[in-house]
Length: 79
Length: 213
Image 1: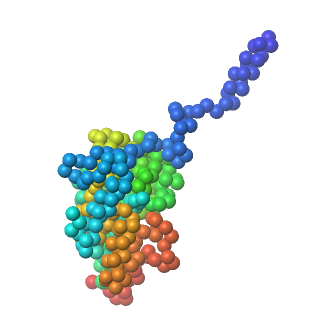
Image 2: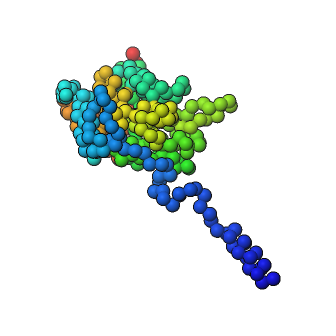
């Protein structure tokens, strides 16, 4: 009888628990429920496109900034 | 560290809609959705008519991110505000929060049912694998992963629309404003998107008296 009462108590107590509803939710960064995006500089440059060293953020940024100068007519010839 | 931003020079924009067309073409944006559009204020008023190209400004403190009930927005390391369409429920809260009217909703069915939100990605795609078919279908082309800048800014014939690293475009704009005698010094939307505007800046210029053409 006591065992049965204890089992019922455990079942009721379990009802009060808050179960995690999403798989791997604890691994997520607050404010970022979405899966992580890959950074642009981690991609291989296209054969006929701008060049940078794969995975090197600085070289990717340098070529982007250089490319941006095309938006200034004073420094339009940038290559 | 680069922080991607947009700036539209209202003194130069000629309302050609080249940026709108470039965006539509590059990303194969569906009918009824305009990730970018050109807005004209004081239309027809001589000396006060200005046009600006408006899209998502990828705000530093994006209000859309703050109000999203499913937290589908995220910011990339280079400051681009993107969202995950797999999480979006099309509630429209971001549309009401955005000061630029950037979020767009395709009509997904009968009775005006809204689809998942669509907006400018700064040509940076989405959370799907870069340059993949899935990414293109949901978000359009990922030009940043190809080392390129947004198509709208690169296509702008008058170079009114500047896009890219904030420091570089600020330098280009500063030089330009100084050369034309401080005309158009206030960059519209810049304060709302990237900081606090100085008092009185960013407001539409007052129409001169009796100026209808």
